[in-house]
Length: 338
Image 1: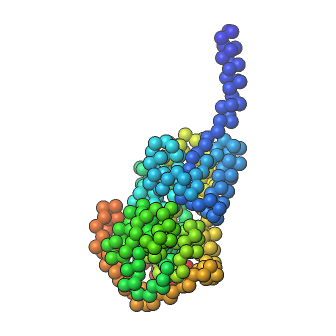
Image 2: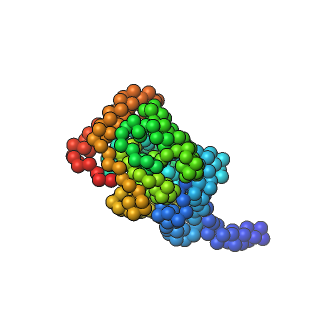
Image 3: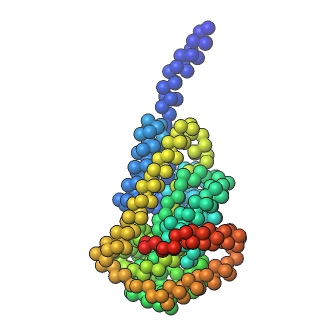
């Protein structure tokens, strides 16, 4: 009886601590501190902490402190991180179907990409699951343009200009090389320095990224030729997510959906503002894209796409995407402004 009473007392005393046990999810991201993206991430983290009454909270490493996207993925594998707010590069490594967004000249707007990726989502989520992750959602970073030191008016000038591209991008970078571009593959952290040193003369980037990393303040000209699209994603390792109580999983999913929805709306509005005049106020001059440049670029991009021989981007996937795009464009004949 004495032993039983001691055991019961121990369980009772331990119960409050167990009931209030806290889970800390460690997340890496290349997103710089002080940006709209960082503020939305913090809002998401606060919402989860508040709604779980402090039982789940996030420790977030901004500005690539946890390493680049691939290094962050390796740290997750070693149990040094639990997930990422990815800028897109780790997304497409873990779910190769997402690489279609990086094919040169394929997508021409956010709505096109959202339509196609929405229909590919079940397969993408399964790829993430097999890679050991739960996909909390994706959000469009936007179309990628050229931010350059000098005006670029022809495809020959575009190909001859040394342009930074993200070194961990395993689709866009190799495609640029194959098409004859003078792409310089380097890290996010090295891009500005390479420009200042004259080793590159521009950046391939979405407007939001150009603003966040201050490349738009360095470059003098914007060439609004849509080269590719970029989606970001929010991933948590299954080993960290699966043990959580179901109510906490639901809270995280709902908070992520709200946050990504806010980011999508804010990102669209930001693109419209930047391309509609704010970049000009920063001193950026927009170089009109001629019909000749546009036609030559898309012809060569199409030819390259038809020659692609990548096991992770099989012809069947590309044909499905082209079919979905044809369906979308037949219903929405207008081209997005931004």
